[in-house]
Length: 275
Image 1 (tube, rainbow, N blue to C red):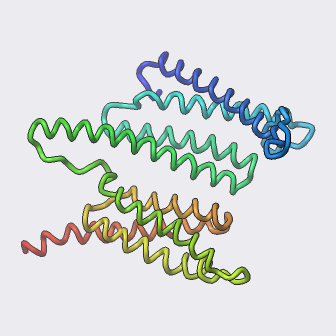
Image 2 (image 1 turned 120 degrees about the vertical axis):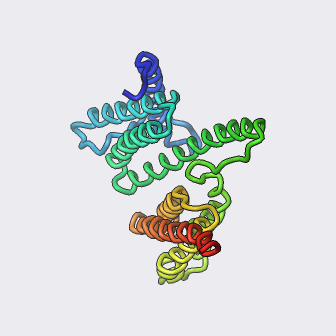
Image 3 (image 1 turned 90 degrees about the vertical axis):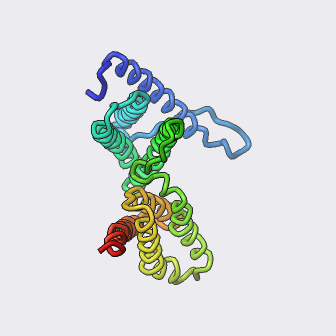
């Protein structure tokens, strides 16, 4: 069990499940309101059937409801602290994310295929990272205030997330902004810029070099390669199609290798100065 107070956790899960069912009801109304962009509004409910064939559509709708309830329960239980110590907190956080990822991937895959599952996972990962990053920012501010009162210098942030933030602006421009610009400049018949030069030249060089710069300045920062991969996968789904999801793998590997090289250079620098 994730929590010592099981009753409190079960109450949060029940409340989250009820909220998930309510959200699914609203989703059905929104999907049924097909005339929303027309002259009238049709209050007709239309629910995801999880691709079940016509004789079994009701079971597909029930499965969709259950998956939304499960997701709501997972979100509800996440409002409680997972643990007090670092190792247990990380392990339980990873387990919780894996459960949520399995839930949203199953729902997205059943209703929209592989591209839908990938989109749901990217959306979940982005929200999850933002929420936890917001929490870490709050905790870091509290710790920094305590250290300031004690007259101590502020220490490095966990996983160097604070040091990574300025590089995210570059990653967003490289992985999402640049391909969008190249798509506009590309000819319609042969998209050479966005289809060849960007994924096989500009993207690997840009992520590798920026990873080296971050690693050389602040040490190994694993959040940066993950962010590059998420930005690239989002760009693939928004600008291209699911066949371009390999951009995320290129970004992840090149940024990770570059960051590792930069971290090694940072470690070797003091030794070279003091042989």
